[in-house]
Image 1: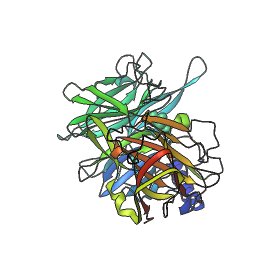
Image 2 (image 1 turned 120 degrees about the vertical axis):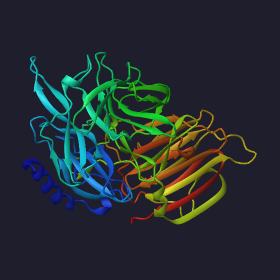
Image 3 (image 1 turned 30 degrees about the horizontal axis):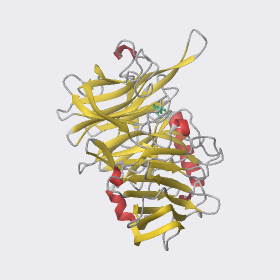
Image 4 (image 1 turned 60 degrees about the vertical axis):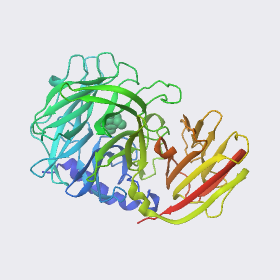
Length: 496
Ligand code: FRU
């Protein structure tokens, strides 16, 4: 039975999505149906379709009581909206259905596992949010909350773990048919940890172990964990709050952390061998992954970040989109990301400029656009000294541009969205170290109207930013203060 709260949300979204024109949205990134979107939830493959749910406040383009929005896709690039899946309508989730995940049950139904939030009045007069793990089961469109919710609560926490910071279950089924989930938690030291739970059937859960403890190394509370096997290793992704910077690897505030190592399934312990940032840009947080039917591990994140949230004005009908689906792999002990290979099928109108030597600022015939896939190789011009700086400016007209610049002497790559339409006094630049061992920097820049995702050196690093400039700002220029030789290949990305 659908509740009144869910019925109202469904009615509202159907009516108000009509006010958003197709060309006011990204083309091949999932954006919110109406209102506000944050984390991807329940990213899964079910009954022959990809499903993506998301943290959703349909009524305003800002965060509010969390529902779950819902969309399906055949190729992860074109999405069709389905009615909202969950609303905060029960005693245990009255103040929000927070992030969670999805899995198919052996009987053909789909199980959603999410965090129920309930504000509790404290003795000192304040309110705290009690967070418990809940379940809903459905057919891919309609979901029924489990009568015995919550299925994991305070009594299932290890000693010292907070009942106010306990959220974002990521569930998976093991080969033997039983289930596991990882959940973000705050231990007594105030930092973060990931808890591991097991279940024979997805409904009855038991605490297994503290999978991994932050010990205040990477920020404090850890949100939105994901654990999976990749290229013979185990990968633990999580999004820490309150990070301190470390060189150019980790920046202040919210971030996304990747730990690569081993997972002892018997003991329920993760052992770290390597750590790195997942996205070195500004707008990325809380990703989730799936295994596609053909065996690829694909990740999608929220293309925003709490600390640098590039809020739009209240009149805008939508706020929030996902990142591109990115294929993950491990190379030289690092996490690499590649745009989903199906994106290549959307390429058309190829324009090539090979071995172009220049200094100063130039534009190139046929190189422009706001829905493009742009490949650049940059190297010092033959026999010349290393240049000081190279920059590509895109989404550009007289008033606006977004830029990416590289200083080879310091190996510093910087993305800058200061002139990208933001009206907020927030961070607009971010730097990372880019390796140019082979004396050549390789970039692939993907634009989809309101965003840029930059893949560096075949996916060794990725930087994501949003931009809200007019679509007529579609110019691209190249700049160097030395002399460089570049290869440029540009494709337009077809709408359908
Ligand atoms: C992360 C997060 C989650 C929570 C959700 C609430 O972005 O804070 O921890 O479940 O957003 O919308």
